[in-house]
Length: 239
Image 1 (cartoon, rainbow, N blue to C red):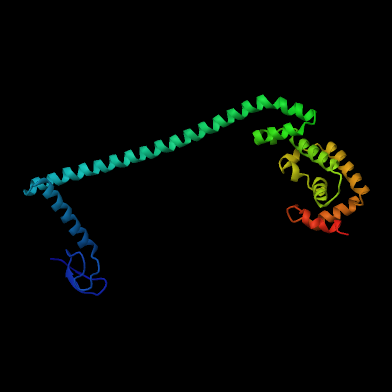
Image 2: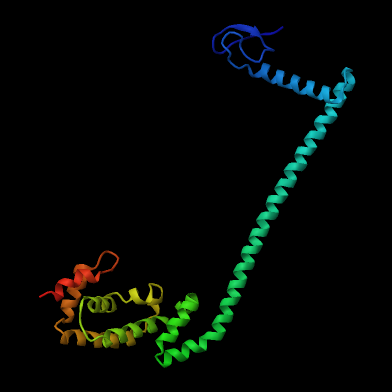
């Protein structure tokens, strides 16, 4: 019989052995041969055959059958995965289409209400509709003007000037995106915003906060993103 040399200890032994008898290092060729013999023995036991010719033919047939089963199993598995993926996409697309349709219906039913409430300065109705469908309302053409109008009304309607009102004023004057949202801020009516801004500046000037002072306060307390805190403004109302 052919001999092999162990790659680990250098010992020479029969190549049919699955591992080196001295150090136990695996012999791939021998191990594979032993595995095939075990499989062949199992097939022989299953078929009860002893004749070499019959045994060889039966093994070939059985192995071909097993290969076919494996291929069928793989095909069925892939088909199942593909169908599940298709179903997921179908349901996702269907859900998206249903939501889009619902959005269109809601817009058709409520756009007139929005316009009417805007003309009548009925901001409570707009706010209610916003909570019903914020996506539609936030994309509404008058949304940034509504945000600034309602905040302007709040600022001018508050009697006492304190740190909270000052915070609102600073955002309105120097960071209106805080009220409208960054994307909606691009749709701000500059003329209307300018008029409201002038009124607030005049009101603050009468209360001892000229525009130069307001800008200085904002720059001093705004972080890198433009946000401020009313607590940082407390010093302007303590003595």
